[in-house]
Image (tube, rainbow, N blue to C red; front, side):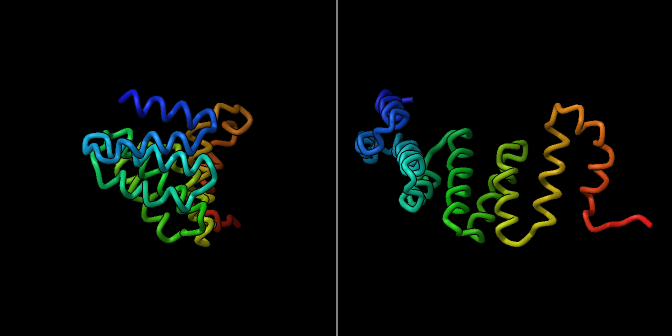
Length: 161
């Protein structure tokens, strides 16, 4: 990672968002670093609470050269930001693209479930979260009921007579 990007990250972490972005903007003419700079500019806007300003930078980052981790970060960041802006239909497309490319990325699942909820897919969101809970918890009190939770999560509307 370039020294300029490292300095910009440190500035962002210290809450100096504008300074961070100004430093990153000097890299936008560099074809090799342009996409990475856009990604960090997007994060800076997101961290500052200016989500709308972050969106075009996520798109610009995704149109350039990123390594696999950076591409994941840009996809996930864009999807999450769109959801937070209430752009649920567009967000779901980006969440699903992220999960298709990075199927083991469990950190995406709670945000994807929130977007499903926002779109009125309450059952699917709840099922997803229950499955995630069972797969990731270490709480013995929950694991005691693992079999039942897995069964119910398959069809929340099913009843037994």
